[in-house]
Image (cartoon, rainbow, N blue to C red; front, side, top):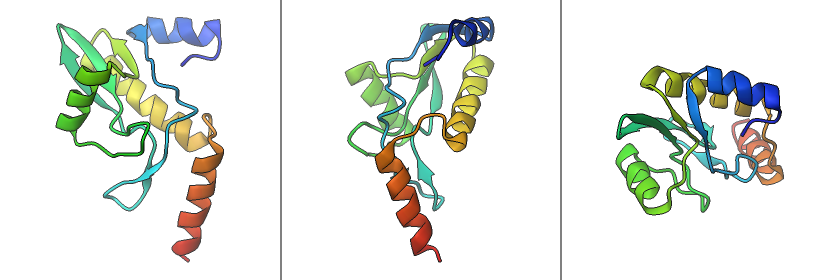
Length: 122
């Protein structure tokens, strides 16, 4: 979700056609198969000529396969944005990953879980 008019204009210029409807501040953090934690773990899927960026993490903390994420989208309509093409959606997914890594969408519960996970690895 853009935090300023300037950011929204930059994203629209970068191929974004619609804002997502996922509350990025409330996304749970879940363990992923690679040993880390994921908050959105997005995938791009084309529907009717538009590229939708879909989260693979649900609000109730499930980590979905790509097929399950598509089914979840069809059931709930939740998405991270609609893009003109696959490349624009991929750039947005990468940008979102980087924003979470920087801590742009702080969630106190996720912060606590990350601290606990790090302490277990010591």
